[in-house]
Image (cartoon, rainbow, N blue to C red; front, side, top):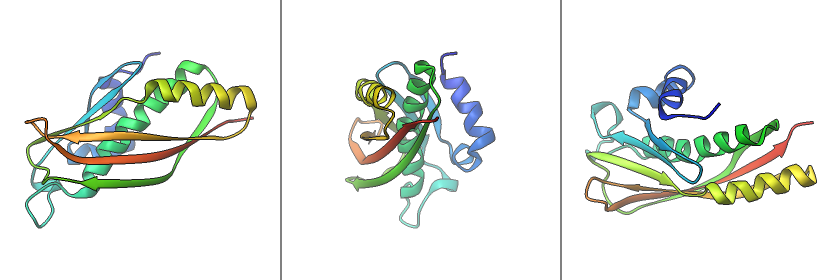
Length: 151
């Protein structure tokens, strides 16, 4: 069963309601990348009239996590996944529509293959870059994911 933006958005509504109410929506997912959007609005603003950093983080993390979930489903194995570390850089006020893109599909393939072959936990740093409607980078998030095949 391939993941689609509609399935991921339904999942968000029921399992991550805060992200859903803040406007986090999957726009695109394929074998190599995932794009998640969020629009600046009253419910997700900070006192400085831009998008709260945590809302940006939810959208960025979801772009990496959805891609990871898709790859795990593709593998047919039972694999646990967990964010073990993260960092972020903010370069411009996030207003309007922000699009977070993760292009790490191939890197996930390699890490999952190694985890399945060795049976040992593996880690992978994944990046999601947020751009505004003018394609100007507003923030960059890095997430360290840990994966391990369940016994």
